[in-house]
Image 1 (tube, one colour):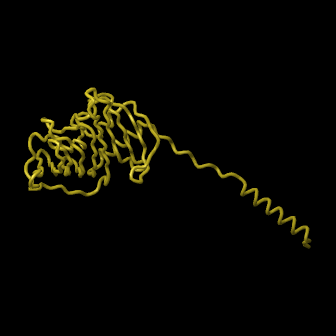
Image 2: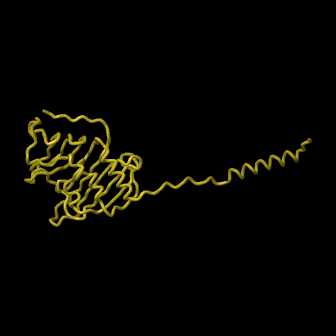
Image 3: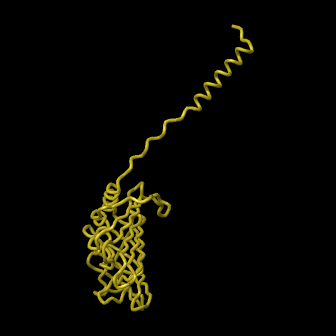
Length: 240
């Protein structure tokens, strides 16, 4: 067969047109991920937390939040570790009779020890210091069961928490739902609950509880709880 310049040119042009046609065709769009309802996200996070054996927490507290019966110890914040079923170690920042102090607490089962504010030595926790942070992991009144009792939850815009993509849920709940969790320092209804949940693992990353304006003009309490190191190995032993 004899190829003329016109034949070669025509063939090249046809190939180019076919190539352009192929490049110009739009690829099929990827399937849209199934959108989860707020209730589904909440249920998955509650179930995930119930399966988590340990967690590190960082609690920031603002407002009037006394954790003793005499209203002399105002909680400012706490950081520590929780290990199921009943072990916790934490360092508290508190205001005692107007003085800022830091003390450590270890709870194992029904026993609790704190450091002396003046000497730093360990001893049995005073009876009047009745708040135990292991309530956060309680199977009855902890953050997991509280998530299961939240009604009318709505989904806000997704956000990032410490670099992790998170669902953001919000709801208004009755104070009785969060009372035991905050030692009844968050009062009034509705209490605004905001939850940030890891999109990939369903781990609860942050929970914020904010009470409505107080009738006595006091500072409304706001608890912000950050959780991390979910399920990592942690040992908590008696200090004495």
